[in-house]
Image 1 (spheres, rainbow, N blue to C red):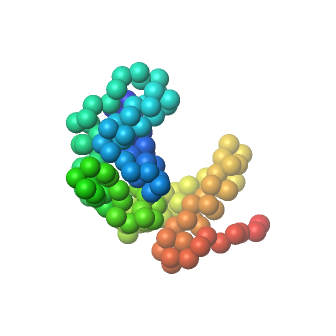
Image 2: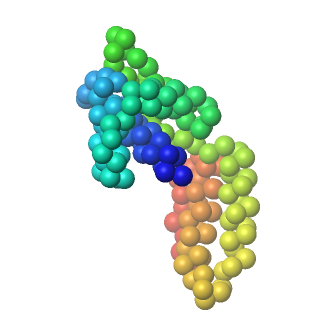
Length: 145
């Protein structure tokens, strides 16, 4: 599990770096940023390898994780997102994801009213709002009880 968590930290770090369009990011800059992030979040004092960051960039570009990040190399040196508004955290949900979330929401609704699950009502409402917003491409609605 730690390897997966470390990879996710690196993906988020690379994403944050490439969103900052006021700086040109070389591979060495991304390696340093990833190493700093792993030290900050996990206490790992070991430098991230060049190959790991290159593999992370390729994984982010691919559709294996659903990111399909539009990462380009400019002047054979600098990494950027071709879409300035892109971020791996803003990826829309697929129809299959929405279907599964709908099923989860229906399952969680069955626990409404139980005293052990008092916080569940609000969480289910938020989940339903997010699902509705994704399906209709409209902003979430505020609900009043």
